[in-house]
Image 1 (cartoon, one colour):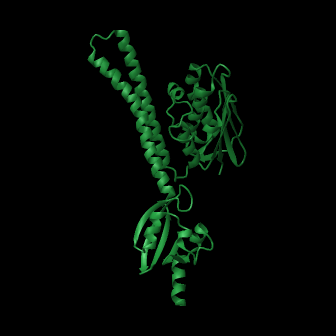
Image 2 (cartoon, rainbow, N blue to C red):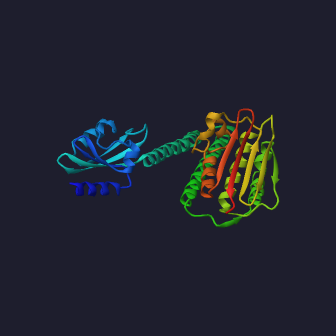
Image 3 (cartoon, rainbow, N blue to C red):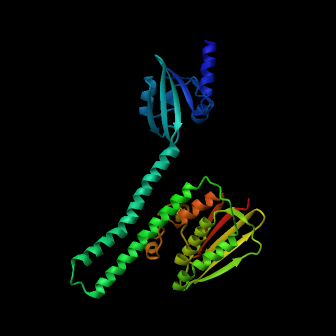
Length: 334
């Protein structure tokens, strides 16, 4: 018996996930992961004190082999798959597989598809409506026809921007496990991004103040992605941070031997605290109407976040109503 128990203990301890051997309704053996999860004194106690999920308990206490997905066994919102294998008439091995990440990823995928469909459906509906009017009304006045054509053009461009940003996200995610290896001068990248933003800045009456330090350390990176990151941050600052109160934004690049910092700051309306944690979510907007009017796709900061993560960097957003917004990107030199 002692030898059998030792073998059972060795088998259960060898499993990476929480595992229990249930005899009747008592936990006979629990490995370290199960004791950490369900309580250090779980062995020898009624399993119903540790697992309080009716469907899971029914499957466990009948000692039938099978699988069951359960949420909230240990903590609210955490998802588990219980693998139950019969060892004898009144004995079963229960393995607990944590599926929280998989469930969360699936939810994100479903939400993403729904949001992307909505974002594309809105301009497409507008395009179809105006196009049908033009096609069906031969006597449409030239001025109105021109106006409808302009709307169709603008909405088509908006759809194109959304698709391009979605493709960018897809490419960045596909490369996330590949370490960037180009030698990058982030100061030069910022200068190019500022040049790219000149037309938008002029159109909105915005002045760009650049402060790029000398001898910025070279870092390993992806030039195209870091340029896109800079373009997005500067473009956002111009679109949402330039107004009658403050018509300038500031772009600063500085560094030491360990990190390079890119900071983009504006003096606009700022952002309320409740929005800050969600700014890098795909399609999340503080003000949907204003974002669409400004030409935003709701994907800019999500793209920035993924680029920063690929470069093993850090991103910080500081903002408050009436005090503008400052975004700082910190990238390691090595």
